[in-house]
Image (cartoon, rainbow, N blue to C red):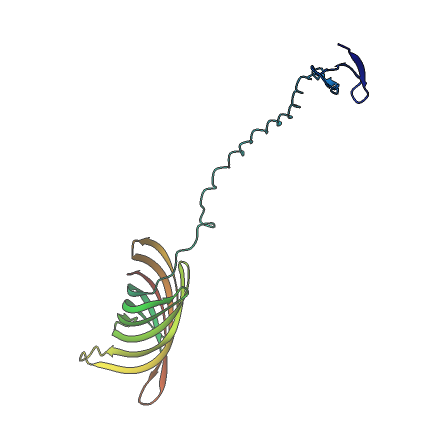
Length: 231
């Protein structure tokens, strides 16, 4: 048996070759069988560790919101306006002057109207005045007066025309001497107390009437202090 050494240039390994011979007549020499040594097995490479994610910062809670400011009359929204029907009852003391003769009279008035917008109201009123002159003559006045009022919160300013019938009672026989007339009135009032739908008010009203007599016209001036209720 014959052995031969072979150098493998590719791997740098020394190879040992053993020739194999055939037995028997006419046998020929077989090519050598090369036995390779086992290749070195390198340990598996450990995987590269992945970088750990950085911890996220904890969310900061927002600072507590301040408590809401208390509602004041300036910040409170105004209630929506609603149209309404109104009834007015008032009375007071009236000073009248006719031909330079002063008269003191008591006044009662009843009016029906409507608050048609936030700043506007309209009325139709009937007024009765009963009193006497400085000389003791009895006097009566009946007035029908439509009016328009401008409304600003608690204040009202009203004006309008009026139809008047004025009577002087004769002391001798008690008969009435009457005259009709036309006039204008102007009044201002202020609400002093409101309970639910009832409002108490005070005010002052001035009237200027022209009495249309059979011969000549005469002027009748009046000033009235009033107080009343509005429903």
